[in-house]
Length: 233
Image: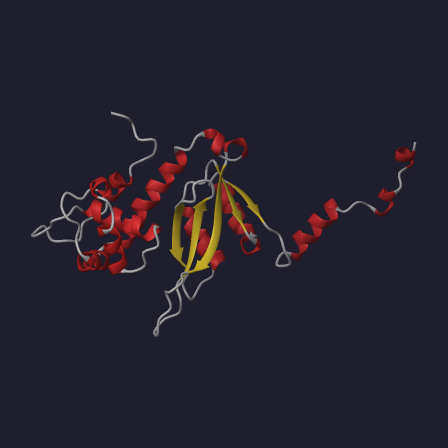
């Protein structure tokens, strides 16, 4: 039997605690969660679209997801996801993503074998409601594979810079270079990345005027560099 090229998602989903009662449980937890992941990646947004995506698939794919009988309707997905432990679910997906990037061939990684990981924030579309603001997420994405390695919500009483410090503590940075925009050009954040044996590559703009001026001075030729007697010879 051929060995899979990448870690199997179902193995990681099997580690998530099942919130359902054992009585009347008809489908495996890993099959339902794998169906949720695939449906969302294909654009499903909501319980009914997720269930509809599953029922639209060919029997071979349904079996590959782990179903041994006709997949459930949307109500079963809704009840499961409302009761599911989100932290355990995210931890399983993060573990799978981490091991997938580790399995990448060396030539697909960055210079010197470093794996680039992008740190960025985004507002989740469709998350705004009458009683709360739109959810703002901070995530770290493996740029080569496109996998989200870890993400968390940025609370209303904090900001992306402070949230990034907590987020990166839960990630293995050895062998990675973290890329980010100027918002994350902060001394404590860069020091934390180096302390975890990682590397960083961040933009420098007006929010760090002293550092920006030093960089500009370092790359600006002196006034008399336009004419050099040695060059004229």
